[in-house]
Length: 379
Image (cartoon, rainbow, N blue to C red; front, side, top):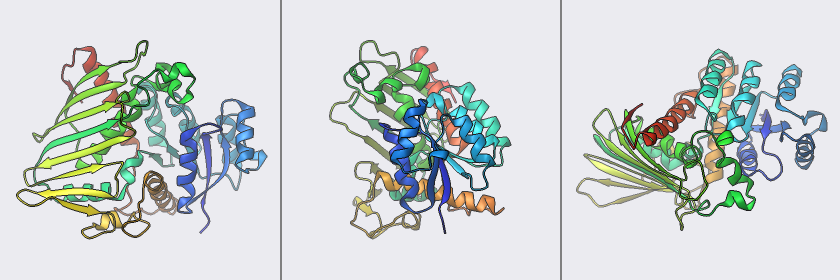
């Protein structure tokens, strides 16, 4: 089966996440990149397309031109990956959704809630699918953790602890010429949240995916430790769940010694789970009163939910790129089923518009709480 024709908006020369999406899209052979508007600068877009070996006629100066022309082609793209900074998510997504082209968008949904709601309205009216790449939900052992919680292995959930710690913004990298840092600390391009929007939404989404629930209220203390930085670079958040569970969410990009420290710990009245993104093929499970048990991807005790999205034997590590690829493959299954007028099956799982809106509400609620001296805010 030939891969689904894919376009890309953003991700040109020097962009990190564009390369990640391109690798993920082709890893399982489900997509083939055939078109793109890779930069707001036409010359850079054309140079990027040439580096990727694309037909020059399908490398566009802007995304609107691309959406219009590709929709008219008999061999036009059926899906587009949007890998721009946050403030440029909604505009391209809307243009392609209007023309029935499926959208695979990097998180968060947009820079502002107003943009998010506008995008949501168009997506709900479109015949095309919208996929949001919260890639950490693609890890096999996260799929297993989700299944274990759902079937009651932990019992009644009591504690949710999630943290995402990095150190790359400990110093003002934005002032040193880092393009990756520049837009992330700029409210006009990043939105209301700094570290909150960049990695906090990942932590929020991960906890929600594994537990199958979200808090009913949060209280947030946000900090901007680097002088002159407008947006938060550190956040401490308390969470209250309707069922009585309590949680903490810690996010920081100014924590020396942490490269990509995403960790999740869940505890119920019958047991607990622990997972770390930097050791993603292992999941620790403890039944109350029993020894701690190590579960490994495709190893003894592996769950069918994990095996379904594993590619290689136990002991051979799968990681970040494979987790991203899992979401692309799930998206491809959903697209093919959708175009055939069929349901993709309950096992096909990927973040959608709902998760995107949830992330936007999370950031807005945290900012509101912080402005009110860490007051509780209902979600």
